[in-house]
Amino acid sequence: MRMILMGPPGAGKGTQAKVLAQRFGIPHISSGDLLRDAARRRTPMGVQAKRYMDRGELVPDNILLGSIEERLHGPDCATGFILDGFPRTLAQAEALDKMLAGMGAKLENVISIKVPRDEVVKRISGRRTCRNCGALYHVIFDPPTNPGLCNKCNAELFQRDDDQEDTVLARLEVYERATAPLLDAYRRASVLREVNGIGSQDQVLARVLEQVQTGG
Ligand code: AP5
Image 1 (cartoon, rainbow, N blue to C red):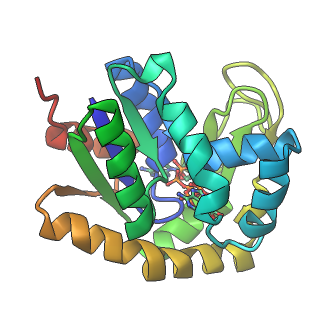
Image 2 (image 1 turned 30 degrees about the vertical axis):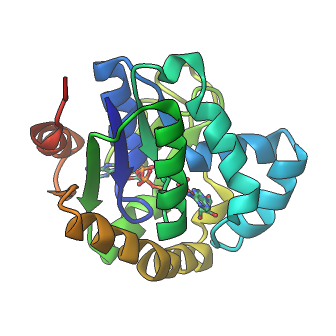
C-alpha cells in the first residue's frame, strides 16, 4: 500500500505513520527525518538543508528530491510505503507521480489530518523525540514514564531545533502558502480523504484506518 499522510506541522503525521507502518508492515518515510538525519551526519545535503529547516522554510527540490527517489527504490518499499511530509508542493507531487510511474506503482491513499492552528502550536511546543530510536512523546499529552527518557530504549529525549516559537509560526505560514494548494489539487482530483485530528492518538488512528483503502 502506498500512502501519503498530510497535515500541518504538529498534526500527528509522524505519530500515526509509525503505528500504520507497523500495522501494514511497510516503511515510514519522513522527509523531515531524512533531512534531520543528513544534517546530524553533516553530509553536504544535510548541511545545506539545515539552513532552510532552521528558518522553517522548505528545503529546495534540488536538495531533497534525489534522496526521496533513492529511498523509494529501497527493497523494503517494494510492497508499499507511508510518506510523511512529502510531497508538500504541487511540483513535488508531480515529481512523485513521475517516480511512481517509473516504478510502475500507484498511490492508493492520500490522507490529510486536520488540526487547528492553536492545537498544533500546543502539540509542537510539548513534543520530545528520542535521540536514539526516534519515538515521539509530548510532555502533557503523551509523557514518558521517566521525564526526559525514552520508555522504549531509555535514551535521552530532545526538543527539535525547529520547534522554537518563531520557526513554528514560519512553518505554519509555509504550510498555508505552499501546501494548501496541493491539498486543493488532491481534493479536486477526489483522491484526498480528510480526517479530524482532534482527540486521542487512538481515536485519530481509528479515523485514519476507516479511510484507508488497502487496494488489491
Ligand atoms: P517535518 O519533519 O516534516 O515537520 P512537519 O511537517 O512540520 O511536521 P512535524 O514533524 O512537526 O509534525 P507531525 O505532524 O509529524 O506531528 P507529530 O506526530 O510529531 O519537516 C521539518 C522541516 O524539514 C520543514 O520545515 C522543512 O524545512 C523540511 N522539509 C521536510 N519535508 C520537506 C519537503 N517535502 N520539502 C521541503 N522541505 C521539507 O506530533 C506532534 C506532537 O503532538 C508530538 O509531541 C505527539 O506526541 C503529539 N501528538 C500526536 N498526536 C496527538 C494527539 N492525537 N493528541 C495530542 N497530542 C498528539
